[in-house]
Amino acid sequence: MTLTLAIANQKGGVAKTTTVASIGAALLEQGQRVLLVDLDPQACLTFSLGVDPEDLDVSVREVLLGEKDAADVAVVTDEGLHLLPATIALAQAEEALMSRTGREHRLKVALRQVTDDYDWVLLDCPPSLGILTVGALTAADQVLVPLQCETLAHRGVGQLLDTVYDVREFTNPGLEVLGVLPTLFDGRTKHARAVLETVTSTYDLDVVEPPIPKSIRFAEAPAVGRSILGTSRTHPGAQAYRAVAANLLARAAARS
Image (cartoon, rainbow, N blue to C red; front, top):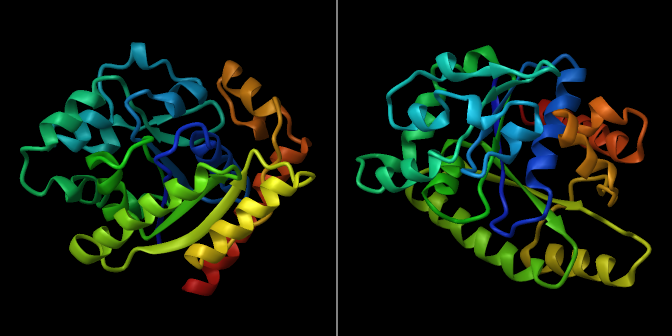
């Protein structure tokens, strides 16, 4: 059964895109069929996996507006991941969707045509709580929250959970919060450990382990169009994402 996982946090710079690309690559290593969906008009996931948004004639924009089927838009990256890419035109689609009937369900309906072809669909949400993020949460079975352990993260998690509760009430009552994934984590600092403890206890959230260490290797990987698993296979960051993927697979097996 396909599991659709939204990676969401409206705060920018918390490694959402890195998390989507790295978990996707780790699941692929485990023999899983994986589709990544770039829902950010900045198209960072698309670019970081070696696909130039400037060269694309169609993207997830056309899928959301019902002009193209997802299967006709998906591309295969050099690492073998299937990707529904984004371009800056997605920002225009967000505006157009505001006046469309069933706008929150557009992504869910579009993905129905392809979900049987994949074990996992990973949704890279934009750094906002607008219609694209709400659409992702409506389409998802679960949501994972990448969390940079600093003071401002506390407020952001609360705002995201408010949106999750609204989505549960109005568009997707079965949405589960998988937990928070500590990213850019420096366990040597008391501040990082304190923020993580405060956030998880305040909002009663699980911690998806292991934490992802802070490293320049994550910034270097997109320059060659790959995830860290494709550029620094034995690096602790790559190993951490492999462990997270194994954690997710175990949770999915227990869920089914």
